[in-house]
Length: 468
Image 1 (cartoon, rainbow, N blue to C red):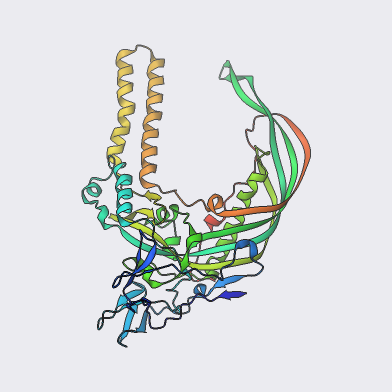
Image 2 (cartoon, rainbow, N blue to C red):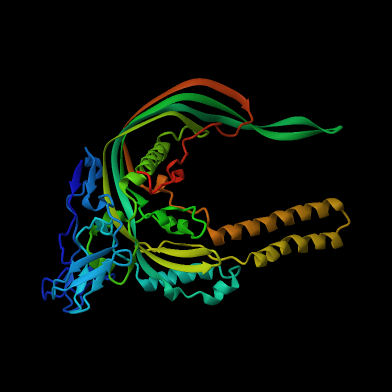
């Protein structure tokens, strides 16, 4: 295994301006450069040259910022390069501070053993003003059924810039999948006589003719920057007290634009600390890599429009690369009883998703109007029971649809980052084997029974921090 040393080795915790020597350096979002707040000198972002492309991996590679968390100690002491004073910083709360003696800015750049310092960081590209505008638009479209207390207290100016810890995983592998696929030849309508009590009725059904094939695909694959949360609280998207899935759903990030970590990028923002090692998430990552591969193969099996059942999925990786990263999120939060709601904005592309507290009683009454009013009109204006029944059924369906649609849109409980489709990948050297097995006629099954080519396994893996 090869280790890329991404450590800045600045044990005094300072980056200094090469022109004037000031340590008061921050990141300018508009200019996308570091800037000295004393003399105005701009700095170019620093790249990591040793990071490999996925296609070049022949062994396991890890950034030095991915080292296991070997200490639970959050308080560290760094020596000020300006006056020599020793300053204590709580890395659970921040990775930069000011010396209270000489006001020099201290940014922790030396990688320490408590998981506070990553290999790379992706700076903010979306400004706070743009994030506030996105949040206002998002919430504004949902205020009609929003909780009245939320509408009264909502203040998007409380949005915070937060860097969350992730692991970026590249992989290069070889696989062979084999199984069975089905291709529809034709569909047609048949009429059947069906007995209901003592009455015989005609019912129309769609039937299908299809072919069954035995198939296999052998291939090479590269996967670029599979992105996994490395803070257990945020990784847990089933948390009943916080809508963590909202933060997950605003991915992907343009992680190819990550730069070498410097604490100055975090100035003015907060950050979450990494508390998961590679060993904690390795099983999850391996299953997610297979999910990405399975979905990548769907472009190779489009002919099998009824589905494919993979009976064997053999996938071996020649090399993986693990890089620890901080990625930027603008975050608005609102505590509603026992649930903490989030509205999150991707700090790079402005993608916005949120959970808004819902006034369910108001939504219920509004939905009921679409059932009750048409039904009353039908009762008073029509003498036919069939018309009344028809209007009642349609009204009930409309009311239920309005209720469920708005309830889902406000809570967004099931939104997530679809890594299996959105993670960058490339298939190559694909070898195909397809053999017709038999024809099936007059089936009433509209799709293949037991197809699994759209299965997602990694999302279901539960990470236990106490188990490597």
